[in-house]
Length: 275
Image 1 (tube, rainbow, N blue to C red):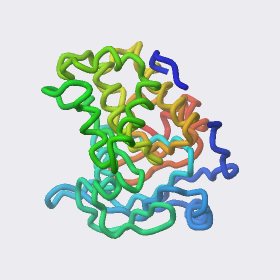
Image 2 (image 1 turned 60 degrees about the vertical axis):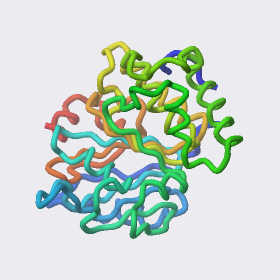
Image 3 (image 1 turned 180 degrees about the vertical axis):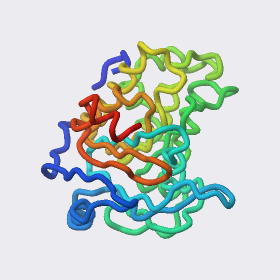
Image 4 (image 1 turned 30 degrees about the vertical axis):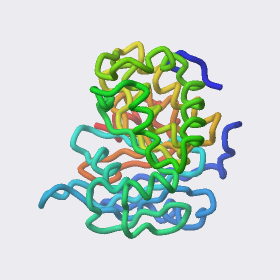
C-alpha cells in the first residue's frame, strides 16, 4: 500500500529496450521491429499518428510504444505536440491518420467511454476537478462507468488506501482544496477505475516545487504496486526522468529521440536532444 505522503511487484521488463534517434522524422528500423515483434509485451502502441486542430497539423507522424507495467515519459518544449498526442490517443480529438493499438488490437474509432471500459484512463493537465462538487461527489463522477455500486465502493476504498488524506476531505468542495489536494482528487478519479493504462498530462502543473518529486514518486509507486502502465507528459524533465524507464522527445510534432531514460540523465546528452 502506498503511504499518505506524495510518494504487486514491478512488472518484469521484456529485456533491454532499443535506443533510437530519429532521422528525417522516422524511427530507426530496429525500434520499429521491436514494436512489431513484442506485441505480447506492448500494451499501448501508436503508429504514424497525425492530428491537430482545425487546419493546423500539430502531431506529424508519431510512432511510440509502452510495455506492460512500464512508465514512459513524453517530453519536449511547449507546443511540441505532447498534450495533443495524449488527447488524440484518448479520443478527445480526431486522429487524422495513423493508428492506435491496445493489446495489439487496432482501435479505428477512439471513444473515451469505451477506452475507459477497456482500462485506459486519462488525467488532463491543470488539476482539473469539479470545483462545485464535494470530493466524494468527484469520486462518484470518476467511477461513473463502473457497472455497479459495489465496484464503486471497492474503487473508493482502493483510492483511500492510496490517498488517506482524502478521507478527511470527502464533504469539502473540491474547489477549496490546495493544488496538491486537487491533484490527488484528479488522480484518484482515474485510479478509482483500476486502469491498466494511465495517460498523465503534466501532473506537476500547479504544484509547489517541493511537492513535484513527491507527486511523481507517488505515481512511480502506484505503478510498481499495481503493474499499471503509464505514459506521462511532463515539463519537469529531470524529475520525470527519475521515475521513467524510457523517454520520447517530441520536437515540432515529431519524435526526435527515443531510448532509455538513463541515457538522458547525462546533462550534455539531455541538452543535445532537448534543446
